[in-house]
Amino acid sequence: MNENKDEVTPKKTPKVIPKATNIKSLEKDFKEFKDEVKEQNDKVLGLLEKVINKDPEPSVIPEIKEDTTPDISDLNEKQDSIFKHYFDPIDGFKAWYDVNNNIFTIEVPMDLSNTTPAYQTLYKQDLRSKKVDQNNILGSMKAWCELVASNLKYERRIRLK
Image (cartoon, rainbow, N blue to C red; front, side, top):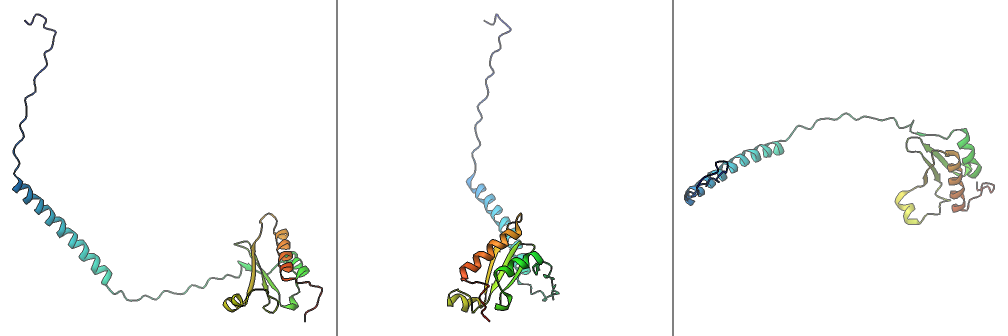
C-alpha cells in the first residue's frame, strides 16, 4: 500500500475532551477576586479622603507687585501729534498705547460720550480701544482717531471749555 515513501500521511490530532468545570469553584474564585479588588479600592479611597479632609494650615502667599508701566506707555511725539490733531486734551480726552498687546486706547470724557446711560452706569468710563496694525502703527492710530472723532461728532476746532 505504501509504495511511495515520499508521501506523508497526515497525522491525526487526538480530540481533546474539555474537563468539566465546576461552577462552584468558579464562583468562589470570582468572589475572592471581588473581595481583593474591593479591599484595594477601599485603601485607595481611604488615603484620598485623608488627603482631601486634611485641613492644611493656610500659607501666606507673598503678593507680587508687577510693574505694568513699561507695558502701557504714554504716546511718543508722533503718536501724540496724531492724537492731538483730532482731540484736544483740554476737553478731557486722554490716550495711551499698550506696547505688549499693541492696543491704542482713547478715553472719552463722560460729558462728550455718546454711549447709552446703561453703559455709563455700568462702566463709569468710555474707553475706545483698537488693536493697531504692527506694520503701520501710526496709520492705524490716525484711522482710529478719525473714526472715534466722527462717531462722537467731535471737532477739535470748536472749543468746549
